[in-house]
Length: 211
Image (cartoon, rainbow, N blue to C red; front, side, top):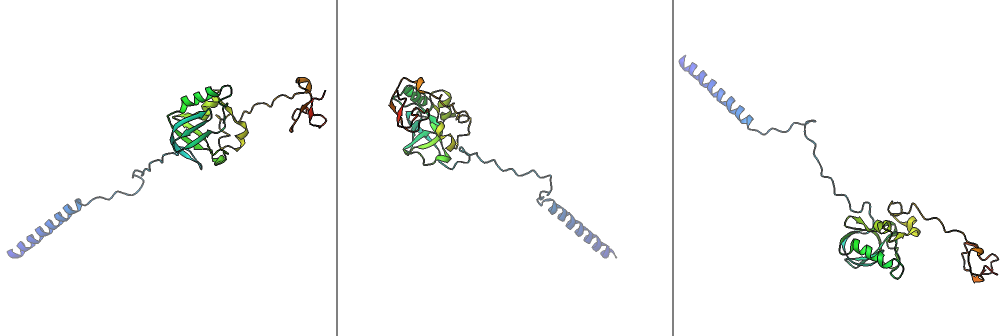
């Protein structure tokens, strides 16, 4: 009888030890995160925006090596850049040297971002890249026009990617020149070539303002 009671007590002790060991082992297991709305959302870093949004043409950063005139400059890689929609005077014309000097002050020796005109890729007859150039944080095209050292090249507004930008001035073309009659000019019997917008050659014989 006593031996049976001891056996029972021993079994109870063994079972208790097993239960305690099982509970201890379970407490050491890693806890999986609960699914549901309480988990913090996974964040994806924002992509770096392109320097030339939606650009199909050239989009490069190069050091400016030379300023040719008020609307043309050279950058590393033997690239000659024509400032698109900018019409600066020639160097031998009034304001030409000042225009070049102003662009030199903006861009010479600086790291420039060249954003090619997507609508005029390869269209320059001299092989230049038609582009907007940012020298530092300055839009050189806009600065040349707003400073008065160049004017808007209105003839290319309708074919340029940048023709709708505010800086280009394309939205405000100048008024047409006034109409003239023979009484408004001192010349007589001069040759008239088509077109003849002022109708100096009234009879169509190629001679204008016949006396």
